[in-house]
Image (tube, rainbow, N blue to C red; front, side, top):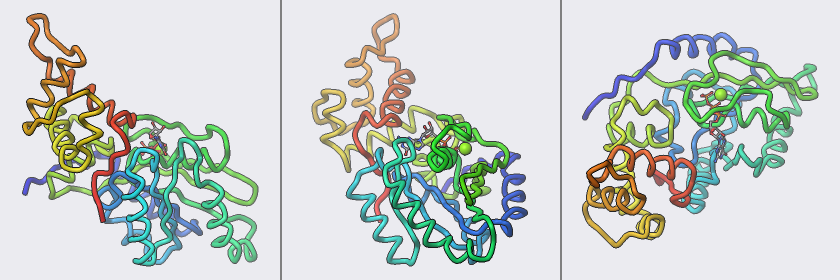
Length: 272
Ligand SMILES: Nc1nc2c(ncn2[C@@H]2O[C@H](COP(=O)(O)OP(=O)(O)OP(=O)(O)O)[C@@H](O)[C@H]2O)c(=O)[nH]1
Ligand SMILES: [Mg+2]
């Protein structure tokens, strides 16, 4: 097993700050990426949060395989977690989430003037987008890269006070395959890994689990070797160097950006 060392300096601060502010929070909204809703969750979080009431959002559900997401939601509910799928970009399921919060918050609002919600989770899973949904405006900055939110930000909506927090990572990951998956969904910065390797892994995963989507996206014939497949995609999309040979890095970049934008279909990277 290869360990990936990937814990940037500001993460320790983010963790300390969350610990500090935790006593103020009444309810935690943990956001996770629906395409990687287990390995993409911070294993340190349950310990940090203790017994605090929590709702788990499987966000970016629009990019994930709907059947797999439904299976995850069921799986987590069986474990006693208040889990639901969400789409912070479009706001799908917003009223369900708000009802869940109202139900949880009722008791609290009887004894104090405001309900304090904390939105937490790993980088780039959509925490700030969830907060913007709540207040129906762009209160928090959102971005395609991990690490956009650096400090804490409170936003008010009626009697709710919602806290946006920076993404939290854990010190190291022991499993190379999970590392590749996390990089694919943009949870960690790609410079920790090689983009061709990342995309070869994605092609292998799709060959195994989403073959029709893959062949369809690039008008490919069935092929066994993912590297040959990457070359074929490069030729099909015209990612060529001067001499006519395929530019693998450019091709990999293109496939990766197609994946992130959902152009390869709705792809989940793990199943319960
Ligand atoms: N397709 C899709 N994209 C989403 C969804 N939610 C967020 N995004 C996109 O994901 C990217 C990250 O969103 P943010 O809200 O900045 O994520 P964050 O968790 O606050 O990220 P950090 O502050 O960097 O930790 C942005 O490009 C969003 O537009 C969603 O439900 N579906
Ligand atoms: Mg953010």
